[in-house]
Length: 334
View 1 (tube, rainbow, N blue to C red):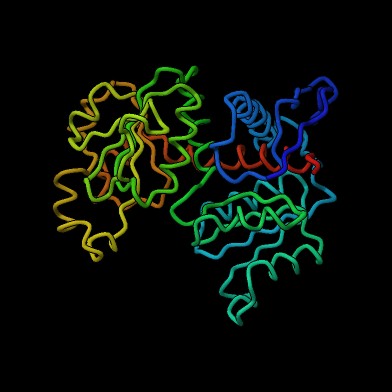
View 2: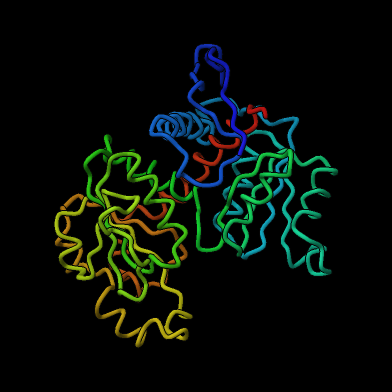
C-alpha cells in the first residue's frame, strides 16, 4: 500500500486562527489500525474535536471536500455506519452517492474491480466500502486511484469503529495508557474486536478478552503472540475485576446454529453483562457497544441504558471521527 505524508506546514481549517499540523499523517487509504501510530491516532482525535464544533455549529461548515465525490459502497446491510459516513461527508461539503450491492450490477455478476472501475470513471474520489469478504478493500487498494476507507470487511477489521471507540474513551478518561479494557463476547468473528485490539494496544492499554472458548481465536494471548498486552480470561467475573472500560460485542444467533454455543440461554447465564457483574469493574467504568445491541442477551437493558453506558455517545462521536478521516484522505496524494 502506498502512503503519503502531508506538508510540514500547519493546515488551516475553518478560520485563520485555527491551525493543525497534519504532517504525522501518512495514509492514502484507511484499511485497519495495524499500521497506525499512536501519533496518527492522536491526530485523528484532535481533528475530531474540531469536527464536533462544526457539527454543533460553533464553527463554520467546512468546504474541504466541495470538489470531491464520496461513494458509500455497501455489500452488507448497515444503518449506523453508512448514515454516519454520509453525514460526515455532507458536513465537509462533499457530493455523496450511496450504493447498495443488492440494487447494483453486482446482482448481474459484475466483479468488485469492475464496479470500482465504473465508479472511478464516474468521478468517485473516496470510496467507503463494506464487504463480507475479509481483505476485499486491501485487494482493491492495489489497483484503484480513489482513496479507500474500510467500513468493515468480513471478520477482519472495522477501523473507524475502533477509532471512534478510542476517541470516546479518551474524552472520558483522558490519557488511555495503562487503562484496563475488557472486550466481552464473540471475539472470533469480531472485526470490531480486532481493530480495537490494535488501537488499544497502540495507545498503551491493557486488554482482556473474555468469552466462550469456542468464540475465542486460537493462539491469541499466548507467549509470542503479536499482542503482548492482551490476555484471555474465560471467567467473566475475573475479567471484569478492576476494569476501566467494558466493551460488549453483539452475539449473533447463528453462532448457536453453527454449533459454537450450546444455547443462547447458556450464553446469557455465563456472559451477559449485568449490573451485578459490572459492579466488579471500577465505579467509573465505561460501558460500550458497537451496536446494534441484543438487549437481554449480551447486555442487560439496565446496563445498556444505565449511567455508565456511553453507547449513544459512540454514535455521535462516530460522525466526528469519520469527518476527520475524510478530511485527511481528501488532502492526501499518491
